[in-house]
Image (cartoon, rainbow over the protein chains, first blue to last red):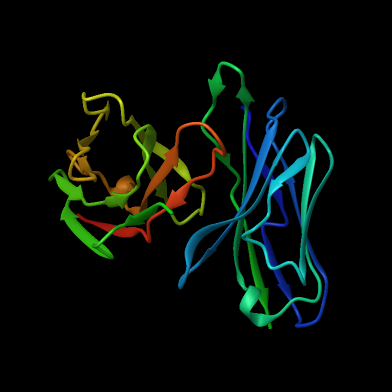
Length: 116
Length: 115
């Protein structure tokens, strides 16, 4: 059963600490998205990658957030330093883009981040 | 920029009854896709149904169907024979054809099923 795996599922951290969220996309998928869900803003796109290269990170605060794909099986989202306003659920999603089309994105279960 | 609006923050329905969730969107594109996602308390985002804008026929998936009105930019979800397991947040989403496959989401509607 192919799925997107995110770790940790929940994270509580103190303000100022570094937070790293990890995502394992579905094997073979070449596109990875990071979305953030808050009560106020809803679901918004932070960044996305195709074939491990960042294509759009305009939704991401550049001063404290960074997203990378060290290899095709791992995507990371880091926040340093974390702030209480970063508290949210962070979703990773993956899909496959080919010349023939696109599979719709499959979502992980999200990482709920609480910054105190 | 594309926007998606869900005007019903909360809805409730009696078990076995039918409920309709509303969604409107704004885009200047002619080719695009619309979706309804379900988010139960487990947080998992589950794709419920997809509609291609070029298709006039409304999509259906078992008890779930949509009413797609392209000219009005309206995309409602009808759930027939509501079940307790249908209780969740429902998000309407838009994706344009080609380019980035990113989704633009509405604010969501919380659906409660009353036994």
